[in-house]
Image (cartoon, rainbow, N blue to C red; front, side, top):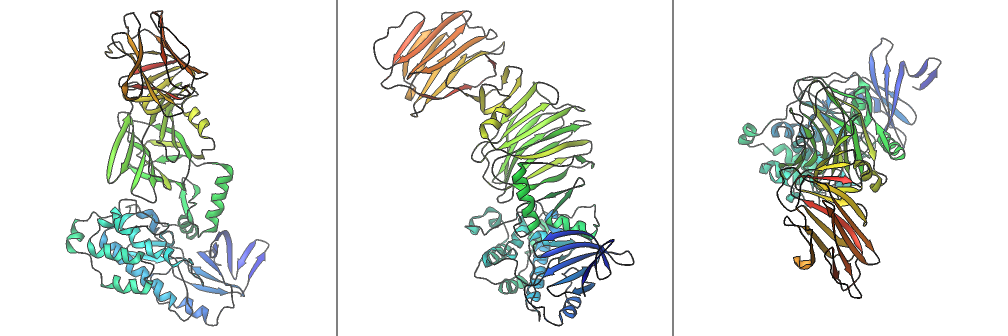
Amino acid sequence: MRSTDKKRGRYYEHYQVEDVLTFFSGQLISAKSPDGMQVLLQEITANKTLPSGLKELLTNLDNEHLAPVLDVIEEQDRIVLVHPPLKGEPLFLLVEPRHGMDPAQALSIFQKLLRTAVRLEKSPIPLFTTLHPRNIILEGNRPFVLFVSFEKFSKNQADEKWRFLLYFLLTGFQLDQPLTDPESDRNIRELPKPLKDLVLLSMDPEQTMESVLEVAEQTAVPKTQKSSSPKRKVPSKKLVYPAVAVVLLIVGAIFGGQLIWDNEDAAAEIEKEAERELRLKGKSTYSDISFNDEKPVSKSLPPSIKGSFHIFGELVQKEGKPFSISLASENVDSNFGLQVDEEGTVRLFQFVSGETFDLTKTGNNFKIEPNHKYRMDVYYIPGQPFRVAVSEVGKDKKWVAVGKVPIESRFKVELKGVKGTHFNRPTISEVQTESESLSTWMNWQPWLLIKGNGVIKDNVFDVSPNSHIQMKDKNASFAFKREDDFVGDPLQLELESADGDRYLVNWLEDGKVELMGMGYKSLGSIDMQTDWSPTTESRVSVTNESGKMSIELEHNNVKRSIHTYFSGVKRDDNQSAYVQTSTPIQLKHISIITKDKIYLMNE
């Protein structure tokens, strides 16, 4: 039996090929039989001579947890399995992080699939499968595996995917490698003891699949757990995919009419190729996303991503509705991102250790309004706080905010919205140059937001309370104002030298300007000798040349300054104060610390 090429297309026997997808164990082929029936052909390459009786074995496998085989086409160096149209949904789409399956259902699926894999390996002609969630389809309560092979899918016993299957079913988290200390994992600790013991046993590289199956067959979920555990329900909208669509969902995901790949599944060669393509291009833009359900629905943007990246797109809503962009860890129980509520308030959040933290949010100076288009940006650089920007398209007003430092991980981009919400041109881009990305985020202003949030409009930065702003240059100048009802010290600067020494410049409410060193020791001061007016522009300049530092301040046309020097003799006058230091000062950072709203103007 042979495959042939004809004028109208390639054929396997009497099956006409429509589409071909290369996979790690061979090829997957969407085809039609002479009577028009849609079938899926699974091509499996053999590295040695195929034994006799193989066709009879494969068509008579007495196992309900394998994709049905209608026919087997034998060739010299491969076989082709003919599958009927497949119903059901890929398992990895049904189990979300932190929302594992009902424990009894999870245990039942684990038992059935492990039993299937053991039986395959013990068949007269040994066959192998992978119990990776992407290779498992769930039709009602019946799971089945699709891909089989003549060789093991993993050469490393400790990394075999079946070892992580029960953990995934119960927690929703996919593991790519064994946990360093499984017993300390919070998700495992919270499981009822029988399931906890079984999960730990599965992850033990000394245990075989058969030995784990023996224990699994004897394991039962406590009755209290059955009644109290929140069940992970299969979505009410059941989908029947064409055969090739199920395959594509297993290898990646079909989303918005566009195929989007997950580059983490190292077994799939086509996913590796997609990863290479993304890495070469540095940016991938996907189809527009529309939410059509009254209840919130989550949709994922592949691929899974690691390292420094920038995510952006355009949000449009017919009316104020909840919306969120989150970066969900695939390795630990954590995520972060931004949320929009019904009132148009944007807030940053982070979920860690089982708790969600609100980090910062927009004030009255920035709101998301219906029927307006907003550009949303999320920047992630490992080891740094995540950063967000939101701006109305065509306007010069941008809200910027800083979150916390996320746990370094591999992430999945998840969008959640309801009917009437659209997120257009979603894009994932690698951050090639950190400084350029941060400058773009800050609209190329001379400062960088380190903590808090604010609104940039033209050359004015409206900074919210409890924020920290860092100047980009060691020689910096800017103007600032406060709110009309402001009461307090006008300004506080923090100066950090390359040697790690810190200095504070405090402009006090009574007009005194003081330079302080380590331990808040006063080094020198000068009086502005003018009444403070919050809404009047004040100007500040910091220069650092030849080991000397100068801080110049101006308010109501009155100028004062403080200078440092490390040799010679200087005397104070009524406009300047001089402070001698033991060594030259080489500034590294100049920062503005504010507990109240402040308006910064780019000079």
